[in-house]
Length: 408
Image (cartoon, rainbow, N blue to C red; front, top):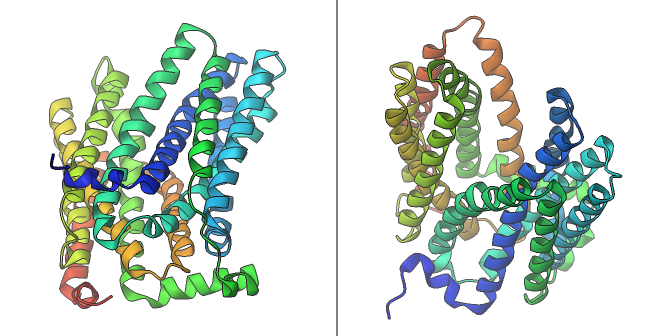
């Protein structure tokens, strides 16, 4: 029987165990956001108190994303993943027990949010750096396609749906118990992975020196610097309109605005699934950087539709295209990093990429809120839709990406 190309990495036992650990981690992370909100509201939280608790997840992510890359390059990556899963399972278990016994407080939930956020920051650089040691180079596109498809299905759909159903049928702590169980199962899969010893030179230098070396590497490696800068600008232009303006306009323009916004976001997730699977079934494009930047730039153009219409079907179709093209570009980006960045530097590069992405998200949201005082929402949607494409066109015209695309 012929195996679908994007599923071939799962025929490798060691990668299959790593994939299952990653899937359980995604489940825990996706379910935790919903559980944390429901448990906080169950204590009688006001909207401001809920925001204050949930914000600590982002603080943990942002505070630990750079140290996480250093650790990933200095320490056995299996040990990092194991520590993350153990911390997450312990936090989820303790939080659940406190809630069951009526002892949970806002500060305890805030602390748990910070710890889960911090652990998540440590997970992905170590995981990204571990993948190339588990599969052959020619399978990396399939691996990234499979993982890109798994994230929206598990983290954004299945996990919140399952835990939300459990909480709705019982009490919030029962949802926390499911999350704790998922992390315990992930511990078992991580324990079965082979160890990856850190190189002697990775632990001989000061951690700050490692961070500076990572920053210098990213800044001096033209194709990484350009790609990360482009992704950061794209995030700055798009996230605010997507997460602030679109739900506001849909709520004002439709009686069931919340449901319409949820359906539109679901189309985005389905697009990401389709785009990731489609790109993961193909070999790495020869002109991989130009292809990636073109996918990202052109993929943002559907945001301009919101300046013309609030028809949910049109918006859903546009965000499906956006999700598909961003997802396909992310498969290329993940593969290119794992193929061309030295393994001893990969954790730091992945963490810097992650840090820049999450740092620009709140900046985009804040900037959008301020700019709506002077610019119309139509203008902001046009900038979100056409700005990334214009930047991509400039990058392609300068020749820098063409030069990078034929050399590693």
